[in-house]
Length: 111
Length: 112
Image (cartoon, rainbow over the protein chains, first blue to last red):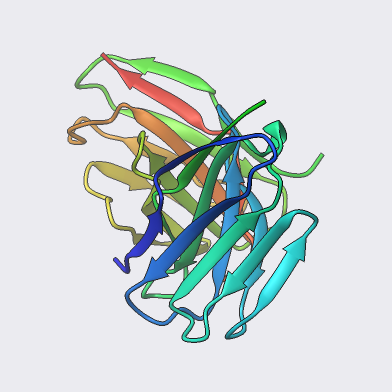
């Protein structure tokens, strides 16, 4: 299936530090979605980006979609312990009817 | 209370036995999906269904089977042919393709 690569795999920060996770695709994506999974929980939708160069903000979270629609990033400003979890990006499969998920970035925030 | 219900939350089976995982949604979504999650592997697509009585294989369909007889239900059977069935299984639904996916709480299957 279509590959969606995500880095880093793990990130450990002190509370108050910033955090960024990156997502790259080998092919152009029609859209990209981001999800958050808390430890022991299930993935929860955060946002969908559709337009080339799109930037969206949700409080301390900033999402970007690259100009070529092949990469995306999620940046968290001034992390809090509530940000702990694994962040996944996901792009459409070749059929367009399902999602291919990256392997995720696990964020640990220590107070 | 709308959403997706997966049951049971934890499931133990002996090697060589088939087991069926339940997934029910009352969101009136057309599309439903099954993903498998292993540590450090992200979510891998097993099967998906865009409409009743139709389903498609995902990337890791071998050893699994599904049915979609009703819009609300998309059960997954893990057969004895699945070499490494122990995993966390997630069911999801979307109103249509390329829209927000809603996930169930997951079923953690352990085969001993």
